Structures are given as structure tokens and as C-alpha cells.
Length: 125
Image 1 (cartoon, one colour):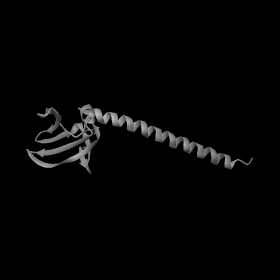
Image 2 (cartoon, rainbow, N blue to C red):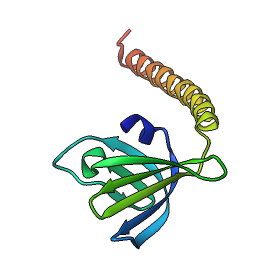
Image 3 (cartoon, rainbow, N blue to C red):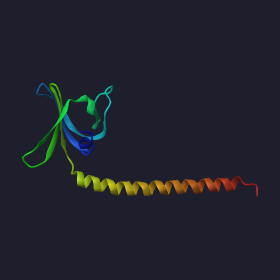
Image 4 (cartoon, helix red, strand yellow):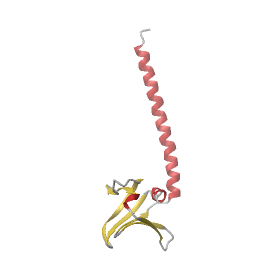
């Protein structure tokens, strides 16, 4: 369940209680975790999903062939409809990771050079 949910990224969500819509919107799944002492949280377009908050996950397929997920606990349901393509998201994430790593490496090297220059300035010779 955690693997499936972690791969979703951007989603449209519909929260129902006794088949009545309580709230709905769009957001990003930022964390999927398992902790019996914490709740699932949806705030500021961010979803923090606790697998322990639900009894089971029901996988559906739309007539267009897209998958969506119903997280169910008794009379409560959280439907998650993916708004992205995991293959495209994975590729862009990989590119972003490479760019982010390059930027971090540049910052680390720059900081190291600054420290070395400061050390040379402190030298009495």
C-alpha cells in the first residue's frame, strides 16, 4: 500500500463520510508513513497519508484506463486520483535530482574555498 501511494505525487482527492462529500481538492502527497499514533493530514494542498488510518485500499480503473485509489475505513473513504504520469514524473525527478546535486556540489566547493581563503588570511606568514 505504501509503495502504491508513494508513487502518486500530484492527486485530486475526495473525502467522503457516509457517502457524503466532506471536502475535495488537489494536492501533492508529501509523505506516506505507518504510525498508529498519528493521523492522516490534508492541509495547504499537502497530503500526509498514514497507512494505519485506513482498513484497506481498493484499486479501481476508470473507463479511460486510468487507476484511482480508495482508502477506506468503516464509513469513511479517501479517493485519490493521480494527476500525473509516474513515468514522466520519475524522469523529471531524476533530472531535478541531477541538477540539485550539481548545485549542492558547487555550493560545497565554493564554501570550502571560502574557508581555505579565510584560513590563509589568518596565517601570520
